[in-house]
Length: 228
Image (cartoon, rainbow, N blue to C red; front, side, top):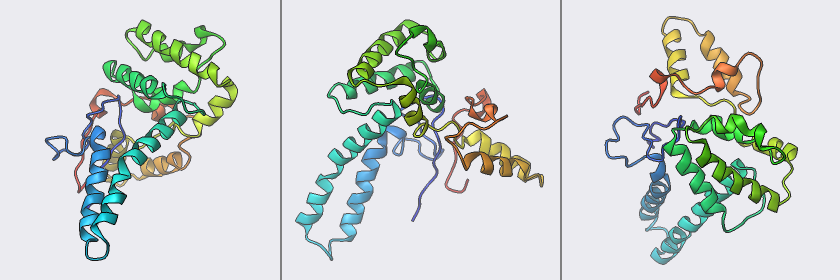
C-alpha cells in the first residue's frame, strides 16, 4: 500500500497540495472526500469475486452522506458547537472562506477560537488580529455569537471542549525539516524535543510557545514526496 505524503495545513487553503509530484491537485485538501470514494471504489472492484455488485454499489452509495455528516460533526466540534442546526454549514463555510481570503493559520486560529467571549466583544481582539479586514470577521463573529447563545453555550465550558479537539501543536513540515537537518549532524535533541511536545499536542507546555506559532516564511507550504 502506498500511503503517500501528508502534511498539516499552515494558512488555510482548500487547494493545498503537500505532494510535490501532484501537479494537478488530484490529492489536494479539498479533494480528499473524492479520493476516499475512489479508493473504496477500487476496493469494491477487488471484492467483486466475493460479493454481489449490487451490495457493493449500495455500500458505496452510503459514502458521501456519511462523509459529509462526519465532516460537519468534526467542524462543529472545532467551533465548540454541540447542537445541530441547518445554518451551521453556511456559518462554517463562510468562516473558512474568510480564513482563505486572509491567509489565516488553520491550527492557530481554531485554537484561539476557543477563547471567544460572548460576554464582551472587546476580549476578542486576538481573533480579530488574524484578519486584515476586521469588519468582515466582526460580521461573522456576530453570527457565531448568536449561534452560541441559541444553545446556551458557556464560555468556560466551551473552551475546555475546544481545547480537546483543536491542537496547540502540530508537526509542521518545517519543524520536521529542522529536526532532520540537526539529526544529519548527529544532533538528535530536536527529535527528542518534538517527540515530547507532540506526545501532548492539546496541552500547553512551558517554554514551547514558538512551536505553537505560525511557520516562518521559508517554512510555509513545504512539499514532500513519498520518500520524505
